[in-house]
Length: 231
Length: 231
Image (cartoon, rainbow over all chains, first blue to last red; front, side, top):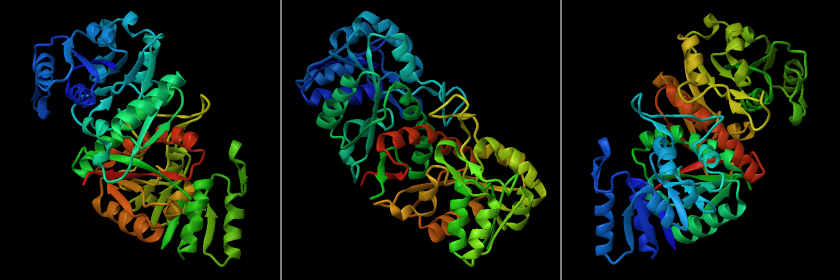
């Protein structure tokens, strides 16, 4: 399939690498595709162009382009921006390029302006996924994958037990595709839970403050939650 | 030990029952100890006085009193109010009665005023536990147990696998007591994680919106999360 990824940061490149390994065609995107990405404390990563060129050397079908290029190329589009820039990037991607398509929102609206740990730019009665769905009513927004680190998103089986991944959205068919195809078949998720309509994204995004503290307590970002019920 | 419980609702009565079974002396408390509690959709439960009388019939050392009675009686105090009324109830309990004591905050600041699912009264840059610690600087506030249903709080082993419970607070000795004694030894928790200072309560309380959606998806409140890491 053709997958368009909005963004070219660490999450975008990790998702793209996995999707390319699986044989899909992937376009990652950036405001400036030739600029290496400075992730602050997390180092630097290659530009979108350098990433795509490196993947093509491996025989994979990778491209780098503008946000509009990625959205136009994708049969499915993934928002992998840093959440604070998502709406701006999606505006540049263009409503017409997103119309009718599944738009998987994996971003968290983190606010680092007051230092670390970050807070959320908005929450509780609002969420990034809801804002995206409201701004792009013809896109089929599904919130998912934002509750884990990029490495876990695409390789949940590196954890010692099956763990939980969530989907929410207003379009059941779009959610079911993300659930069955992207999450279960492509990435290997085993405990996928449908939380309901897109307002459930509030809960998915509000997991982030607890996740950040758990990362501190565990000393690693390679963890996730598993849901356990009574017999 | 003498345990004072601020509140007499479902959570307060469940905690009290378990603590009484374990042989402790427990005072639960209410603004009006003779009034049965109307929990709306969740039915009604006995008044604080009727609860205590019923427990005494079973040979247990239960009392019902004012918020100040409970705080004065307890060597350890548990805030089991509905979160929106916690500060008011603790004011009535009295700062002098709380000074130097471990105060376990198990409440969530849920706002049902806009219907269900509830939102939080405040979050993200604030939390109920922080507000309590700020209002009662001489109390040793530990946030814990708010992330699960009352039945799971006191009986985590009804779940099919060990699951996670969190503690946060500014007083390490107080946190360690809650961790080792209340959670592990008394209630049987097996995966207790120290999240750091009391600001970590933001994450613990912000779990609630996801918990509420998971309850809907699972069709039960008898569940919890387990943290799974990589090898």
